[in-house]
Length: 121
Image 1 (cartoon, rainbow, N blue to C red):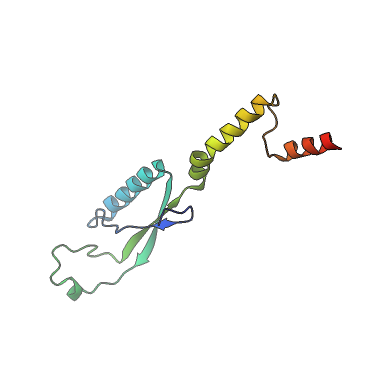
Image 2: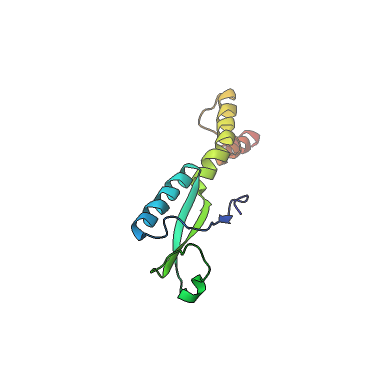
């Protein structure tokens, strides 16, 4: 589930199942759309073997003539998480250092701790 930074999501990949070329195009479109939302996608090839008898009663066959299913694996893009969720904290830190009159030091940084230590010694 994607409610955690390490979460994984998947879905039934029934995109253009009758044509391998269009299936690949559809997977790339999904990949682009999900990347705009801060998600990374990969499509893991899984070998499948479905006997013709198993399709009995099924209205529309998927992957007839193909032995590979591409399983979508969706995860958060770490750079997106950092940029979207920690940008406000970073901006606040810069604003605080500006108010103190020291642009080169962010509060809580090693430089900041060293400066405090040198002032007390």
